[in-house]
Length: 201
Ligand code: MLT
Image (tube, rainbow, N blue to C red; front, side, top):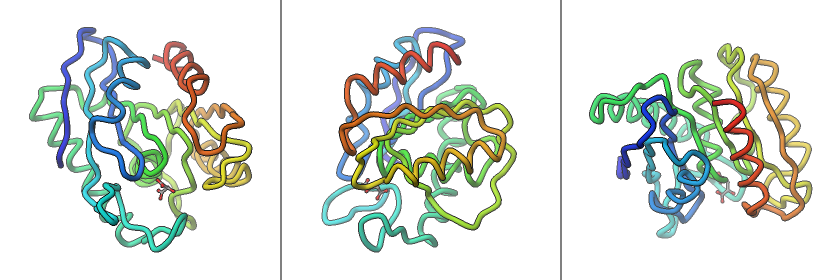
C-alpha cells in the first residue's frame, strides 16, 4: 500500500499507524501524529479505494452505508500490510497504535472488530460502527480513545454510544471525548487525544 514511514526518536514509543479520512492522503495526518507522540515512528497509509478521485480505505454504497464485503476484504489487506511493514522497517508489530479520522477511523475500528492483535491501542476520531452482527475478538484492556460530536451529521451520538458498548463489551478500555463541532477534528479534540495518549502509553 502507498505509505510514508518516518522513523521515530524514542526507542520505546509505540508506532502510530495514521489513517486518513475520505479524500485524504498519507500526508494528511503526519502533523497530527507528531503532535500526539513526538518521539514515535509514524506509518501513514493511503487507502486503496478511489471514489470519484477521493482515496478511501473501503468502498461504500452511499454516505454511511458500507460495502461490507469490500470492508472485510480491505480490513485483511490492511492487516497483512501492517505485518509486512513491520518486517520491512524492522519495527515491533505489537507496538502499533492506530490514529484514524472518519473513514480511517472506520477501517481501524474494523481491524479491532476482526483481530485481537491488530493494535495495542487506538485513537478514533469520529468513527462509526464499522459493521454489525459480528462477534468481536477479546480486546481485554486495549485502550481506545473515541473523539465524537454530539451533533456529528455523519455519526450520531447514539452510534458513538453503540460503538463504545461494542468495544467495551469485548473488554477494551474505552474513553469517549465529546465535542460540539459536527464531524470536524478540532484542536481541542486533538488536545484531549494527546493527553489521553500520554496517560496510556
Ligand atoms: C467519510 O466520509 O469518511 C465517512 O463518511 C465515513 C466513511 O465513509 O467511512
